[in-house]
Image 1 (spheres, rainbow, N blue to C red):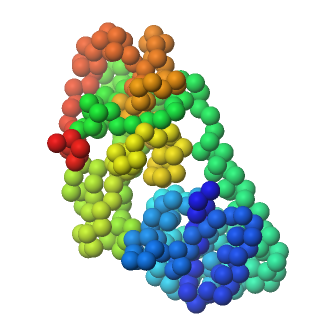
Image 2: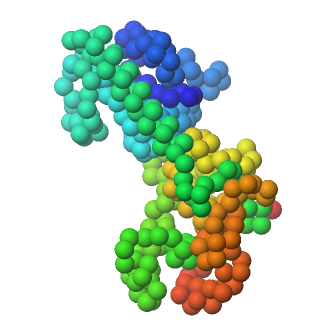
Length: 327
């Protein structure tokens, strides 16, 4: 596993952190920490958000200094934004400030100062358990009809995200009553389905580099008004990765982009992604059981339902800009 643990700490605690990092290394747990893992020619603001996004667990080394560090605060914000599991290790026994108490509400902290050897043992045990859970979650097998070997961006649809999100929502499973209400033409249900679909495609909220406000400059692309840093919504992250790397399986996409499995599978059902030609693993058409490479219906079943779909879902506002490869 690559850089499984991100270590967030104050430079004033470097000596203690070196001992902890060595314990992780001896236990075979890979980690990332600044400054030694920042490549030559790069900088903190560029590399730290990337490392946090790719890590599986966020190890927070607590002390008086770390609670006063603006960098540690930014790193926690970034970890929360990426929904990382935070493991706090209190190396000095310092009480939590109001801000850190807010960050770490209901998070169990490991005390280090009174029993250092025991604290390291508990830390390693917790990290192993968390990393095992993350690996199992990523590698767990889906049902045959949702299992995919590799995915790519459909060439014929690379210039758009696909159909309107409201139409896509009609083909997905929702809480009891939602889809049934939509079939009756219930407008509030239609709005609920669209909102559920939009929630899967997470949009960035704050700048990972400086914490500034983001503004949308293109569909799926956002830019910080303060420092100019660009960030992307979930689909654009996946698309950028596949455009660069070619077809990849769902676990590789998850690890590289940080986008959850259910979101990636939604993009597959919504025909924004597809299984490459020749793959031995296919999805199953919900209508007739035929093998399909994306979506939930084969072409023949789509033809049977096209009039109904058009009558129910007339919204076609959610169109998207072409990317560089579409011109």
